[in-house]
Each structure stands twice: as C-alpha cells, then as structure tokens.
Image (cartoon, rainbow, N blue to C red; front, side, top):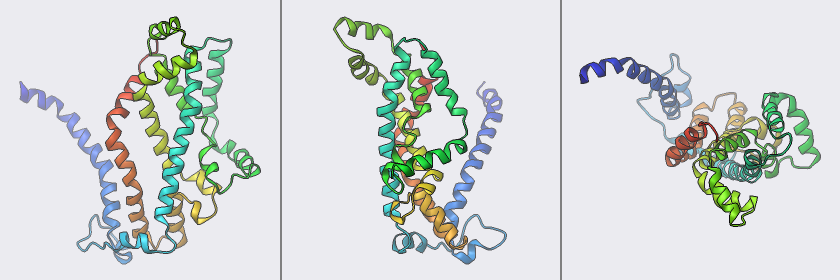
Length: 279
C-alpha cells in the first residue's frame, strides 16, 4: 500500500525536485562565482564551482573606498522599515473603513482604488518625479519613504482580512461604548496579527529590493541603497568587477533570508487566511 502510494506521488516529487534545482542552481552559481577571480569568471565555458576559492572579494567589499556597503545597507533597511511603518499607518485605517463603514459609494470608491493598479508605473513616473523635485525631496530619505506609502495592495489585503473578523465582537464592543477607533485598535488589529506580519514582510522586502525609484531620485553616494550601489558599481567598471558585485549581492541577500526564516510561518498563515472569503 505504501509502495503504491509512493509510486503515485513520484511524478509530484520529480516535479518538485526539478523546480527546486531551477531555483537553487543559479544561487549556487552566484555564490561560487563570487569566490572566483576576474580571470577565472570570464573563462568559457563558465564554471559552476571553483577549486581555488578567492575570499578577498568579501574582504574588499568593506575596504574599497568607492564601496560604502555598510552605509548602503543602513539606507536600505532604514528606508524599507520606515516605508513599511508609513504603509501601516496610512493603509490599515483605510482598509478598516472599506471593510466596516457603510457609506454611499463605498464599493465604487474601492473599485476605483483597485483600478489604479492597472495604470503602468511608467505613466506616472515623470509626474511623480516632478512632484518630489518641486517638494525638494530628492536625494533625501523622504523620497525613499513617502511616495507610494498609500499602497493599494496593502489596503486590499487588509480589507479582505478585516472582513473576516466576526462582527459580533465589534457589536459587543459597541454595547460597551467603544468607538470605531477603539474597535479598530483593541479588537481588529490584535486579531489580524498574521495578516499584518505577512503584509509587513512583503512590503519591507519589496522596498528593500527596489532599484528603479531610488536610482532616479538619489544622486549622492551616501544616499544610495544597496541595489543601486551594486548596480552602479557593475556599470562603472564595465562588468569587470563581477565577482565583487556578486559578493555584494550575497551580502545584500542575507537580511532577506533572515527575515524569511524568522517569519515564514506568519507569512504562510497570513496569506492563507487572507485568501478566504470575507464575512
């Protein structure tokens, strides 16, 4: 019986193994090539591993005067954390209003909000850039935090979760004299921890890995984020510093891996529960 069950599951296992190799092999190559010299990495055919690893690339990351990895890492983490906090402050009350307040045009307004997602970012890029320039926000942390803090995805995700909170709990709070803000703060938010954690991780990592917006809105080397700094380093030397750039990419991925390992259960649970139908 067990043998028959194993054989029936064999195609699924084979598919998962192939999918895992597709995901893992590029990461292995990136780590391996970060340990190569410039001469070895440019040989053809390319090698998956090197018999003589060079660890000087990881040392030079912090010694090179044109590489401010510690500063760039701080910029990325600080901007992503502040942006995530701004998203919570702005989007959580808005999501609760769409989930619980019944006012004329509620659904129409929510549909219009969702429709803005279909507008390509390239269409609003120039107006957004001119706006932050006129507000004198260029090359500051403000330009990395506030634009986009009214996140439509966050409003949608939290609204779907807030709709699952039993109304009976809020009705009981109303009998005790709780206001909308009291119900939101003392009942809905504590019951939505998994959704908040999942959303926070998605927003934080998305902003941490963002390249395009910081690239066009920051100029000084001190205000660069880690993705921008590594990209400009690669272009500055015509791709000749590829092992150093790959070592920097490994360095940049460490905070992401740590966040996923710590919060993986909350991420899965939050996404699964948010996908259920609302009440």
